[in-house]
Length: 368
Ligand SMILES: *Cc1c(COP(=O)(O)O)cnc(C)c1O
Image 1 (cartoon, protein in one colour):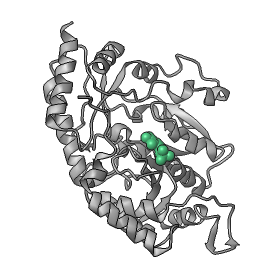
Image 2 (image 1 turned 135 degrees about the vertical axis):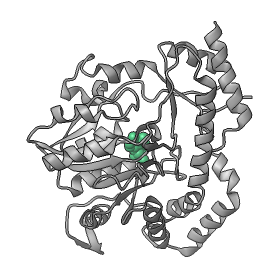
Image 3 (image 1 turned 60 degrees about the vertical axis):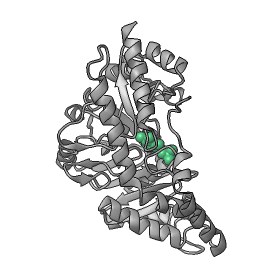
């Protein structure tokens, strides 16, 4: 029996009746873009995040890009980003015309290391974009303290962390504004693309509301040079169904993570994720580190177990960023992580027996 890395169809099967009803409701409404479903979702997701505002957009990259634009950050400006992240974090900055300035991660949390940020700040720095990578919240207090000291905006990339908490507070409310993705594989995933900006800053929320819809508040009156980045009614209706289950599904992810942590801790040669006492992660990914990554991945593949690498090439070494002139060796921690990380299957529909088989398969590799 093959164990996929993630079963994205399982949520549909679990709530088929509710999804089908939502589909029919939208189809029969005759209204398909920016309507009642999007508005209802925005209200519900803002409440879920314990935040003031939510604006639905087309995807997670747009959410982050529009925040950068919304704060007037562009050509000649710099934004601090993690060196160790998915490339979308950097692209959001680049698309606004600004330059991403990478900072190395903390080895325990894999997230941006706050103690290395100050050295990267210049007079051109306008914001710090923190990422809650793998669903583990970044250490936001020192980041906010630096932002305050230098007058910077703090933007959270929450694409992997729907529902996570930092010192009791939901991610998405820890900085000035946050971008979420509803790509199907995320903890809250649509059946297509989707995203949202969450913020307590109502001026920013208003800018995003304009930017996502051709810069227009009143049809055919365009106040700014806007984009077309709207969340559609069907995706909104479908993620409203999933939102009712998000806490349960995150809880199940915690159980899977706790099984892995409990059963694999004695495995030599593996570095397991560690959770700081201030963090309540949502385990978008369960990422182990090992110098024998390729051997373990190969034997899991042979055992019929899907794994992935998040991420094999850091943004600074991608051809997309040759113009920034980074070399191998510029961000050694990030580069080593790219060689050593391996993501094990995790998700709300991964059963205990499957989990056990994955654990046994890893333990067997260790014996060789
Ligand atoms: C998925 C992801 C994004 C982008 O989201 P899309 O909806 O795919 O545009 C941004 N940042 C991180 C860390 C992500 O994992």
